[in-house]
Length: 296
Ligand SMILES: [Zn+2]
Image 1: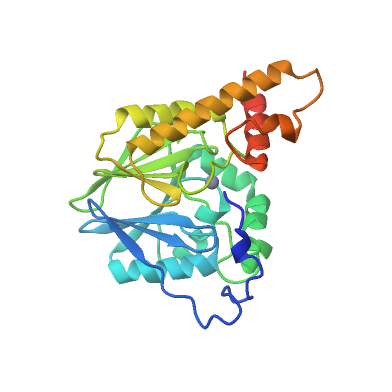
Image 2: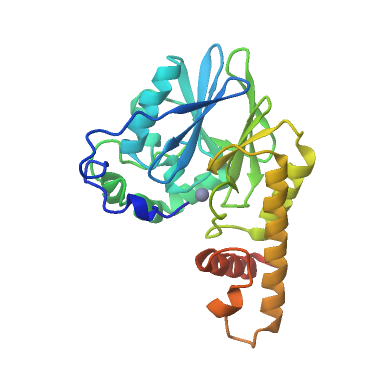
């Protein structure tokens, strides 16, 4: 989940900036092992595409029908194969395009079982998140604006799919960034959703910071030096970047614990006290509150 950047506020109702004739087609970045990445401009959210001989897998569908239509057009420039869809997690910028893809004939949608629960419970919140860029989805009015929740629920066991001469592995890796985060692996490429963030701070609003730290440490230590991690936002990164994100989070958790231990009963930290954390004021408050709420 990410806020709409200031540059995207004041959008023209058709989704483009005033004076902009028509948005340029979304551009794919080719990755190893039949994988692709593209970034939708609104939330700078990455979708992934993995192409086999028989099927293609799309990872994350955008914030609503407007983004989903652009993503679908981009997918059809790469492949005409039938699609399956995987949602990495239950934040609106990643899955509210599902209903558009359902209308294009996609039948198989996958997400973590905990994420599916969160999608069902937090629909109004997710619509509110995307309202500026996807007014129809925000209001729940118009074509392809239903909240389409995946029927295939993933658990913590790896789930392998054969796209035709290309095996991919889907796995619910816990509740780190958000309930029921899922990763998708194809060869050397690991699509990690918002568990990994490049170019912006991690988003802690629905997080479990201690679980998140454990997951990042595991990924950094178990993955090879040639693994290409595709974050939910920002460009692909390597293992060293994941280790740095883990180190920063470990330090932040330590500082939060120290801060909490020194506070008088019944008082939360001030902005100034939170300024020792390595994040901005909003994320610093979120990580502190989520750490307190999710610690035993
Ligand atoms: Zn998210």
